[in-house]
Length: 298
Image (cartoon, rainbow, N blue to C red; front, side, top):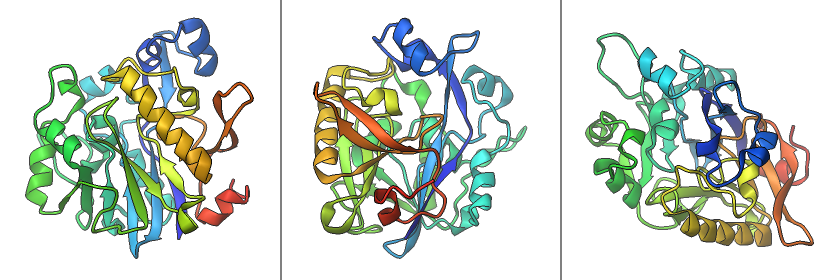
C-alpha cells in the first residue's frame, strides 16, 4: 500500500473563529493572519492504494462547487477544482477512486465530491465508481441540520448521494468496503458523528489517523485549543484527549487536513504532560506506512 497527501482548494477563514477562546496574541504566532484577519488553511485529502484491495480517498476538500459570490464569502482561494489536478499529478483520475471516506458532510470536507460550478448547470457528483462512506450520525445531521450549522452543509449533496445507490452508512469501528484495514473512531464535539479514520498498522500499532476537525492541524494538538465552530468544546477536548492517549500508546501518526504546512506528524508528550508533534512531514508521495514510521518520508 502507498499513501499520498492530496491538496484540494485552499481557504482563508477568520482566525478568531478557527481558534475559539485562544487570544489573538497567541494564535497569530501559529498562523499569521492577512489584513482581513483570516488565516490560511489547507483542505488536504489522503489517498491510499491498494487498501483492502481498493483505491481509497479520505475526504475531498472544499472543491470548486461554489458560485463566485460564495467562493469569495467563504475564502476559497482557487476557482478550479484543485483536488482533481493533484490527483492527476499522483497518477489517478476521480474515476479511479473506489471508496471515498467522509469524516462528515460539512462543505469544506465534502464539497470536492461535486463538479466545478458552471453558470446554470445543476450540481452533479464526481467519483462515479466510488462508494461513499459516512457515519450514521453525520448522515442524519446532514439530512436535518441544526440552525447553528445549517450553512455548513450543501443542500444538493444529500439527495445526490442517496440517488447514487453507492452510499454506505458506517455504524461501528469497521465497514464492509474497508474491512479490518481501517478502524473508525467517532467524536461528537465538533459535529455529531465525526468519523476519524485510522489506517491500521501491523498488530494495531504504527498506523495513521485522519484527524479531520477534531484536530485540524498542529496548533490544535494542544488540548485546550478548540474552534469557535465546535459544537461542544469541552466534550471535544475530552474526545481529543482519549484519541491522543491512544495514538501515543500505539505510535499512531496524525494526519492533518487543514494545516497549511504539515500533512503528517508524530505525536509526543513533554515532561509537563502537554501533547506536541515532531517528525513533521509536509507531503506524502507514494510512501508506505512502514516508511513513515522509519522517518524516511519527505
